[in-house]
Amino acid sequence: MKKVKIITDSCSDLSMELLEKYDIDYAKMNTVFEGKTSKALLSWTKEEVHDFYNIMRGGNRITTTQVPVEEFMEIFTKYLKEDYDIVYIACSSKQSGSVNTANVVAKKLKSTYPDSKIICIDSLNASLGEGMLAIKASDLARLGLTAEEIAEVITNSRKTVNEYCTVHSLDALRRAGRVKGPAAFFGNLMGVKPIIIADYNGEQAAFKKVKGRQNSFKEIVALLKESIVSPEEQTIYLAHADCSEEEVSALKELIKKEIPAKDICTLYIGPIIGASIGPDAIGIWGYGKDVTYKAGE
Image 1 (tube, rainbow, N blue to C red):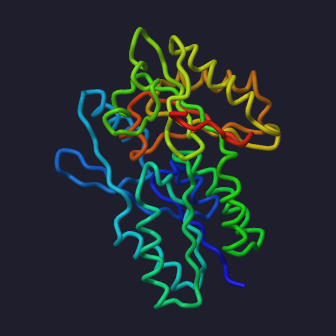
Image 2: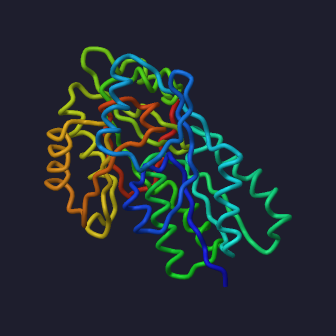
């Protein structure tokens, strides 16, 4: 039976430490600023994170591209040559066309590697929601499951990922066309803070709104507390877009107080998601009840 390599992409927001720990590779998207295209690396330092978000704080827009065909060709071929089957866990197709590109490349490579499999999965999530599924897939690969068996479990797990995120401003999300639902239009009024989730269809949706930054922290923790299943058996992921250490610590302490999780892992929101969501966004993720909310309904 062939070994299985798990591949994700820049939208997963996994740190290099986690990528190495779980033996996950990632296909790189690109950011574009002032005409310069750069690979969206997840290996950035604290200083690079701060510089990136300060560009946006200055009123500038950073745009992004999906994973290029050449990148998929390179990363898939690398592991096919090493006789791996591949499971690629992609950013939600509602937010990136990368999974479609990957499928096209996988079909092209089939003629050269007829005995190998490349299974491309639309995660219906982004950021750590996507990253969590990649970690789960890695655990399954280490247990010896086949690519098809891993794909089945991950596909059935997509809507058990619960995301709750809050932002200072919806300006970046609105410019990028990332937020669905009428609440998006009221997020910047009178200090109202929207709560963003990954909905049933994989859209980033403005789920509800609360007044004030601290109340938004309390709300996302309350929502995860209500929806999470068996928290004592799992890690809660906390990711932020260059928030202050005080804010990150405060949210982490609130989680510890309210949810008996096995662990809390703190990470940065990476350059692709960050370019859309903007500075000072912060979110938490865990496995829980099935997501049923559909924006616009």
